Amino acid sequence: MSNEKRLAGEAAIRYVEDGGIVGVGTGSTVAFFIDALADLKDRIQGAVSSSEQSTAQLKRLGIPVLELNATGPLSIYVDGADECDPYKRLIKGGGAALTREKIIAAASAKFVCIIDSSKRVELLGKFPLPIEVIPMARSLVGREIVKRGGNPVWRDGVVTDNGNWVIDVHGWQIADPVTLEKDLNQIPGIVTVGLFAQRAADVVLIGDREM
Ligand code: 5RP
Image (cartoon, rainbow, N blue to C red; front, top):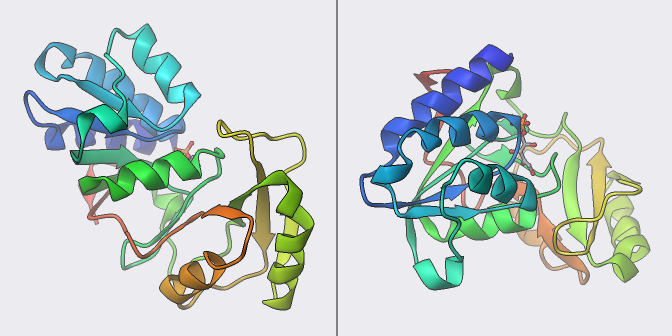
């Protein structure tokens, strides 16, 4: 699988425009993309990063890290996923970076998702759905999830880059991810739902092959 991750990370380079600013996700697949991006660093203005982890790698490789508030809209965002359905709708947040990832995806004209073939599913939900919550809302959100038939598990010990906590929801088979995403977004205390369905990916690369 790690060879497919590397191929996907390298294949995403073809979507990077000369002189542009690249939105950069988080994870082991994105790490291959950042390595490949370093070879083009003199041809881009820089990157907007979705996590402290990616920021550290970008800086180590000499790629300027820019603030989204300063750049305005981006032409491209490259990120991995934990699951991807046939409509390019995703579960993300295995690395707890979902909030900044969703913000940058929303600010980008094209979302290029890079995965290995194990991430491709018919129905989302086998991978537990990550939800970032304000810490004081953890039990309230947990009860709301149980009402909806899910099994919430607190990712104990994990604090996001935004100072929040993560709940992983097991046991959902997500046939209508757009409706579920909208519904969960109404629960007070939820910061971000790891469903990328309202704003799905535009391009999915499985290894070096477009889906
Ligand atoms: C981080 C994410 C990652 O994109 C996702 O977990 C996939 O990671 P990897 O490329 O390491 O398999 O959503 O929050």
